[in-house]
Image (cartoon, rainbow, N blue to C red; front, side):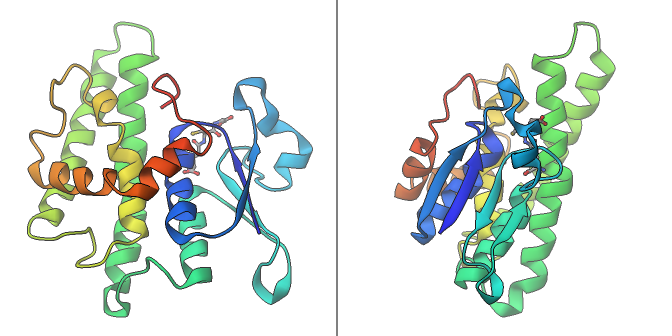
Length: 215
Ligand SMILES: N[C@@H](CCC(=O)N[C@@H](CS)C(=O)NCC(=O)O)C(=O)O
């Protein structure tokens, strides 16, 4: 059994997607970050960084409980546990590279672009321009990778696609004001449309109910 600690924000969506795609049995454990529940000692024992998502696998390696925090670590852990969505062994380097690229580059830059366009005080044009351009540059890198490919690492749908889906789902906020934010990135657009149409995506969105105000 997987205990899935979540708040209905975007980072949990990719973990919800894996759980729904794999059919693993899981239990939702809400952690209301708007009330500061992520700082309670009981949750810090699961995620010392005090952020969601996190999981507790009651049947971890050697039959022992295992905690895993940070969404990419969770995706990799669950993929290795189930042997699913890892892609072909010969693409292992690709999988790790794109997973880390998303976690350390495209994701945080997109997050900052969104923050400075929606949450920061007015007048911070330098920060807005920097992060918006960096986000666009990273979208373009992903677009080039997806040219002629069905999925990010090759022919197989993997956890890299699940991770990227969670980020690209926020394109309308990252590219604030754009009518069709993915239009300049046609390969990303084609790929996103395909992933977003998967039945597991609809179930993942329902698990913990992402609303437009929390995404
Ligand atoms: N790198 C982390 C980031 C997680 C993250 O930013 N979580 C946010 C919600 S989406 C959070 O818990 N915020 C509450 C806080 O930082 O106190 C991951 O991908 O798991």
